[in-house]
Image 1 (spheres, rainbow, N blue to C red):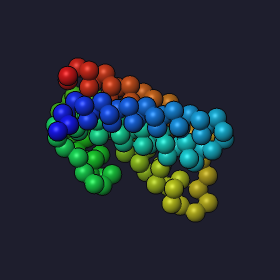
Image 2: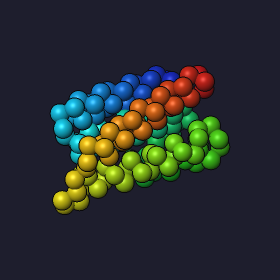
Image 3: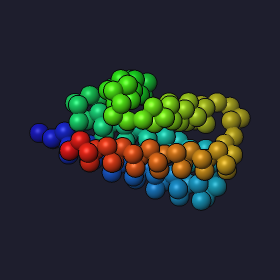
Length: 130
């Protein structure tokens, strides 16, 4: 059986892999795709924390809701992180599903930087909780 911390570590590593993909895509000028990978980095980092409480959801909205309920509202993670995660989800959905939605270089860069900060914050939080 996988231990909670092992699952959390697996998910945080997955988050770092998504960050690496986001950076590669950004440098290749693929801003829509980079934005999506940035979101998935944040999403997997949030799921890493949820693993410590044996929580998860099949829906993205469920993961975000659980993250906010158990880590933002309790003060374990700053409120800004919760807002950034939700904004990233909306942006990812727009870039993936909306017709004629073009992500600018600046918007993609800002999302990538936000994702890096988010993943680092979650990594530090995991270390404190272990």
